[in-house]
Every structure is written in C-alpha cells, then in structure tokens.
Amino acid sequence: MKRIFSSHTHEKTFEIAKNLGKTAGKGDIFALYGDLGSGKTVMAKGIASGMGIKEEVTSPTFNLLEVYDGRLTLYHFDLYRIESEKELDMLFFEEYWEGDGVSVIEWAERAGTRLPERIIRVGLEYVDETTRRISIEYPDD
Image (tube, rainbow, N blue to C red; front, side):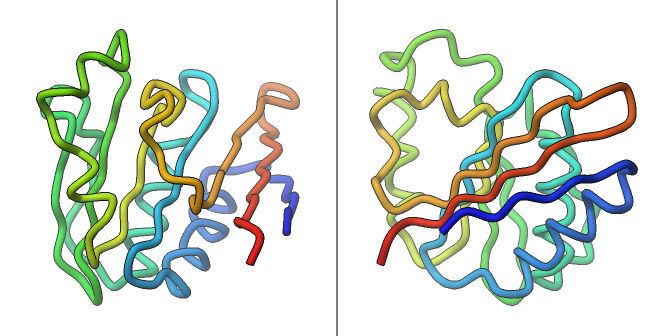
C-alpha cells in the first residue's frame, strides 16, 4: 500500500510523521529517502513524538546512531556519512534492525542491500521551495 501526502510546512510534515509513530510496532523500520533538507530529520522527530519520546531528537550525523526510550525503543540512524555498503560491515546495524524496537534510518539508500524486505519506505521530494511530496509505502502483507 502506498500513501501520498503534500506538506507545505515543517509542522505538517511533523504531524504526518507523528501519526506514523503512534501506530509503529515492534520491529518496524522506517527507511527515509530524500535530498538534503527535504525533511528527513523532521520525519524522525515526528515519529519519535508519536512514540511518546519526550527527549529532543537530533540528527545523529556524527554518531550514526542515537537511541531513545519511549513506548518502544527508537533507534535513529543517519547514514549520511557512509560512503559504501562495506563501511557497514563493522557496525552491525542489522542487530538493531532485527530487534524489538523501531528503527528510523535517514539516508537509507546508503545501506545498500542490507535493509530487510519488510521496511516502510518514506520518500520526501521537493515540489517547490515550500512544498514537499511525501510518499509512504508499506510492505505487502
């Protein structure tokens, strides 16, 4: 199933993501795709808020991973600095992705073939300076 949204503000993007977080379940993986500045971190913050996380969620660009406690544990990945799939060999991210928490992965395309088949793909595209097209694609059941 694929759903398409249009957002003209950070607040609208945040609310769309918050609704995703409210329904997130154990083992869910949100793979975020989009150009720099398209709203991936806003999506991560909204998902976290929907999961009941009160802590400020920031982009973990330099750490690659931040962990937050809420209704479920949130593993927030930012793969922006990963230049090749081989760099992931020593990081063992799959252990998190296969766990009981919820994973949000910014720059998911940098994970290459490592992502499991059952992910929720969230694409953020620029329509114009203030408008984003958000597509959310759920795995087939």
